[in-house]
Image 1: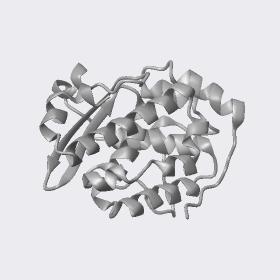
Image 2: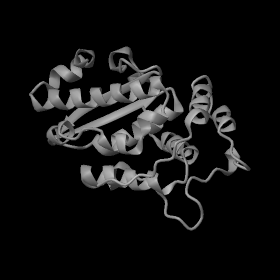
Image 3: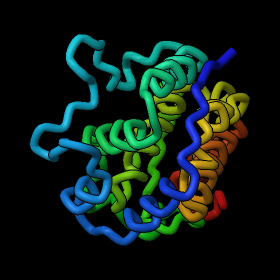
Length: 211
């Protein structure tokens, strides 16, 4: 069973998130999230004496282990401002996509920010690449890829994003961000169903048809 601390910051968090959505660079974002003596040049997501929690996707083991690890990591932080900082750090570590792959055909509908998802089917596993022009969304993508990338289609289809509900991301993200998160999960599952049902070539040739 997943364990997650419930820290409700209410209107303060929503107000900060609404400002985040209007910012165009990471420096401004960190100034908006400034807490106490926090400074961009000295930001440490993993305080001294604690283990590093930013894992590569290759370290995530099984899909169940990956989701449990994420829940455990988020429960480590004391409040949602620290969790947002962690998500931002994950986004900074995301490899992303070259400009050539940021095309309209691979845009995910339903996201306020621009989000691109690519998938390929190799050795029975679906491997995802993705990127966004919004720093928080990049962090959410990093979490999604850690759970869903390099899995079999059946694993992906049979694994709903329940860990996001446990983390209460839906209630702490702005409405547009929460909708975008659902849209990204829908696209991941749509790719997996297409590969599972033998539509690999169609999915890769016309990803927009996935919905």
